Amino acid sequence: MATASYSTSLYHSSPAKFSSAAASLIDYSFSDSDSEEEEFPRISSVLPPLESNYRRVYLLRHGETNWNKEGKIQGGGFDIPLNENGRNQARAAARAMEDIPISLIASSPLSRAAETADMLTQDRDHYYERILVPGLREMSFGEFEGFPRRRAGVDPALKARYERIDKACNEDPSKAFPGGESAAIVAERAKKSFFEMLDRFSEHQHIALVCHSRLNRILISEAFLNDVRHFPNVKQGNSCINAIDIGLDGFTDIKVLNFIDHVKGTLAPDSNV
Image (cartoon, rainbow, N blue to C red):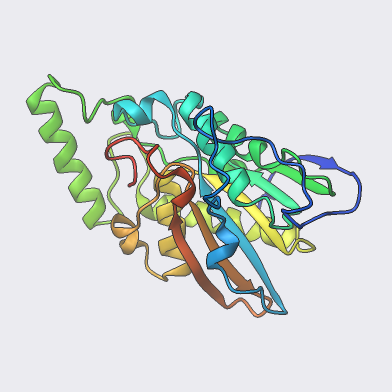
């Protein structure tokens, strides 16, 4: 069996300071003025302490791209960068996680995920590793990548064909878009890549991983809900944060799904899917 390939960077710095009160913060606000009266939402506020013999994975979706905003299907074949709103969303995710002692920051190699993950490294004054995981790139939608599913004026016959195929793929994980991947195939490669990453970087207790909407939904359903067929019902907004605890005995426990309080008011219509 081939060994997974990782692109790895190591960073060393001063001892960690995890108190947000003591940290020097970048202003991640979406406007020119940031209210000091309203506390910024942090993922830690809705999480219990991590139990001994467990690791915690913070699984994120990347920030918004122009194709997300326009309702176009990106998939694994198009490397569309973040737009400015997406970069703000990524910065907000970093702020929502700034008090978490993350020591491994991983992502899909596609730039929208990699740039979101890079935002998480800002102002981290402790040792961390930054890696790319090729097996966690977005699902391929084949000939429908680039299809503007929300655009007015789309050919009605083509839209009806897309909706028919999408419905069939949602109902049967073995079905795929023409020229693309099925949910079952993605589940296999995503689960394998995810647990290989955990095994290889086993010394890390708090791990951030940035991937994609369909990939996340399939991985969550296959690996943590024990049935890939759940994926159509899992929501993943841009820059959302999920938290999953994984025991040394292999037991997994979803603590939070689709935390989006930090990007409230910034999500495009139909993007929280």
